[in-house]
Structure formats: structure tokens, C-alpha cells
Length: 340
Image (tube, rainbow, N blue to C red):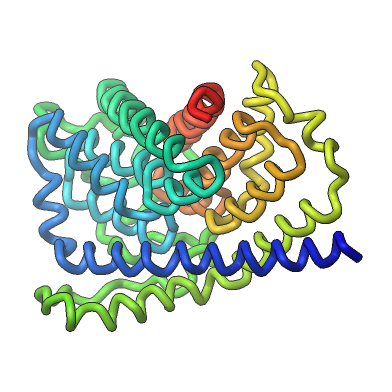
């Protein structure tokens, strides 16, 4: 009976905490995106300086939650605007690894100090990997015909016919950014439509009601996965025998980190499930390092977003993205215990 009561109390606490974290973040992001505007974003990222492109792409990704209904269409918009590939790559990496939601989850699970340390490491890794992606000319594996990045002194080198081809259909050159959700990712992108022409910023007081409504609109389709994640976390805490997972992932070793990262990919179907499940697993004795690897791998490369990306990326570029997130999860899992 006591275990049942504790499970129910944990369910309620986690649910309230997640909603309190989600709404202010989404309101702030909605206001920021409205204030800047999509056209200015594309012009802002269109410079030819490599260092500036990397920094701007990272900053844009850091304020954009990795959700298929927002990040993937925006990513396609940047590509269609011929933004330099280094900026596109930095945005794509920073969005799942550095957005406010994942930093909030890390802070809730491991503390503010750990979240700050992770942010510094993730920024460095994002800049280095994005620079490497451009040096390797991975833009040739984008499924967007006619892409010629600004700031590039060479025409885009297309992949050989059939190289890195994936099951997703190649995007038509006239596709609109808002229509980037393929049939495979329809569930994850439900409600995503082409946005109307943007209007001028009307001031904070006038924009705030729309930002509130936008936040509620984003929250509604997440209610089911949110409740599911909280329920799974509560059940893990209340039903899984203490020490069962701790015996497998209780310590940070050479094999527990990649194992935890692999287990995280199917476990976290949506980012909002990371905190409740993560808190429950930590309570059962799972080590901080493996737990961190699970959170980063699961939130950075969840199944719905990877499905959507397969409509934009050829297999080689998609593999590079997954390998980058996976490496960040393992490296972070090895370093995070040092901050606790």
C-alpha cells in the first residue's frame, strides 16, 4: 500500500514539474521567434565567415527545441535559403543537444552545476563537429536539389546516384519548409502546416496572448506522451525491484555508457518523457554517467525526429548525425560524474 501511495505521489509531482517547465520555455521561444522573424533569421545566418556561421548556427539551435514540428521545417528553410552548411550543421546539432528543454532536464536530474558544465562541453563539440561536417562536404547528402550554400567558393558536389540513398523520398525543389514532414513522420508532425506570411512584431503585450496560445497548442499533442512518460517513470519507481537496473547500469564503465545510450534510443520516444523516466531510474540506483548517456541519446535522436530527418538526409548524413549524438552521450556520460 505504501508503495502504491508513493508511486501516485511521484506521478503527480513529476507531472506538475514537467508542465511548469514546458510552458514558460515554449512561451519564451515563441516570442523570440516572432521578434526575429523567419526572413531575418535566414539573412542573419547567410554570412560567408566560417566562425560567425558556426556561432550563429549554434545559438539558433540552442533556442530552438528539437521537435519535428518546428526544427525540421526550419532546418529545411535554412537549406532552401542556401545558408552556409556549417551554420546548418551547427543548428542541427545544437537543437537537440543544447536547447533549453534538455538543459532544464539535465539541471533537474543532475543539478545546475552539471547542466552548466554540459552546456560548455556541448557547445565545443557542436562547433567542432559542424566544422568537420563542412570539411567532409556532407552537404552532398542533403535531399534538396539545387542547394548551393552561401559563403562556399565551390558548387555543391552531389552524391553519386544511389549513394547513401534512404527510403525517404527526395524532397522536391519547390517544397515549402512547412511541408517537410513526410508520410513516415506524420504522427510526429501532426498539425504542421505551411505558415502564413509573417507580420511585423507588435510589441510584447500584444504578442504575449498569441505566445500563450501557441504554448498550449504545442502542449496539447504532447499530453498523451507526457502522461505516458510520467506513468512509465512512476511504474519503474514503484514496480521495478531496487537494484535490478543498478546491477546492470550502476557504475560508469567502458561498456555501461554505450549500453545506456543504445537503451535510451527506443526508451524516450519524446523529449518530455526524459525527466520522469530518468528520475525514476536514478531512484532505483542507475549510475549518473549511464543515466546521462541515456538522456542525451534518447532526447538527441528520438525515433520520430530521426524518421523526419530521413526525408531530408541521405543515409550517410543521417548516420553522421546519429554518430555525433551517440558520441556526445558517451563522452558526456564519462565526464558528468566528475561534476557531481
